[in-house]
Length: 311
Image 1 (cartoon, one colour):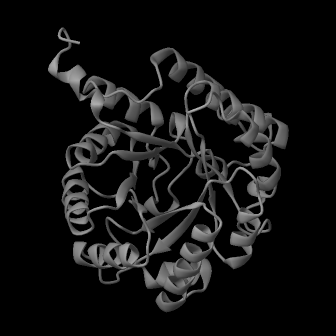
Image 2: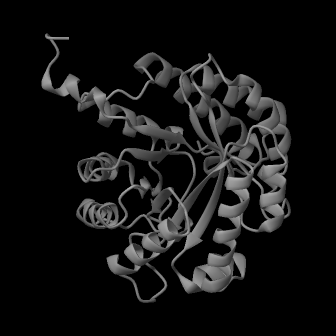
């Protein structure tokens, strides 16, 4: 221990890496068979991934890729790994019907809910007013608490609003204070349009963290590949210790209007943190295997046919 460098001493930081295959898969052209999903997710667990946004309980007609979420999660739950290494499986819900499905599914440990501070997006995506969306959050909190499940709220438009609506850090802060008062203890700030600069990420995150002590606040960022590292560093140095990512950056960001903007690659998060001496529990060899698996999955299911693949 005495020979460790200052960088290595930072490994005492607890950093949670949330792998987001659910988000990554939703935009694929072809539906992945249930058995392939289970095999992929089970292998990720064996490689050290302990937190996964793996399922959505949205209506199947809207998200056909997630129609088999109950079956996938039940089978994945059997891959909990060694005792003392609990697996967090997040299931996203957007309404009470989805909540009922998620709570009835063994293996879902955390209910995830996307709460938008944009009135336009909230109405367009879920047909809810702010009061209705907040009422749903209160219901989610009551029912997850009764079922001994966790609740994580994803605050979308947290770093800006592309719909020409009022936006500012104070709106994010008010939302987080309300969520804390409602009993929410985990929230993730989402850069929905992928336009936030490192400076904006740091500013918003610091303000958010300071106004809701006791709430774990993570980030779900989107970026062009060449800007990912600086955004990760900005969030980490502002105090963030919970990062969402998607291996190989799989998954787009439709609001950005730029096909090169997508989910922050998990490998970028891990290598950036490793350079700071922060341990994430996922070693270099395991990360390489996970990336190779994801590339293979992308090649099989990202295109409608082999002929549609780019040369």
